[in-house]
Image (cartoon, rainbow, N blue to C red; front, side):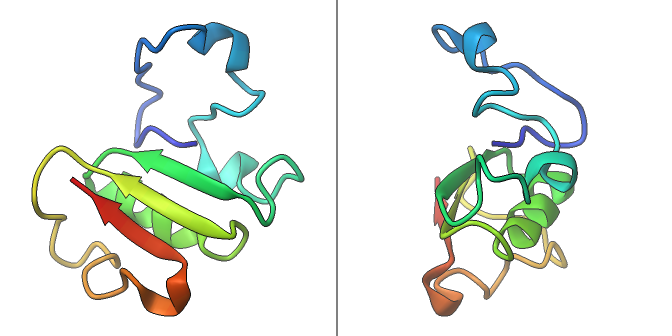
Length: 93
């Protein structure tokens, strides 16, 4: 769903074909759209922006998977301690 503070492409196969049709760079802009509403979504990134967007998306998505490279998220990101909260947010390292 979202890639953080800047729209970094992940270079996935057929990524361009799905840009704005399931792949987005702005949770605030697109998170409440019918495309993502009550559906599982993934946020890629472990920085502050990705964490904030993951928490924001719990208002709309059925589940948010936060995909991070490191085995920790930034302190004060809003994610720490929220994983599993209501079954809406999970971390994958």
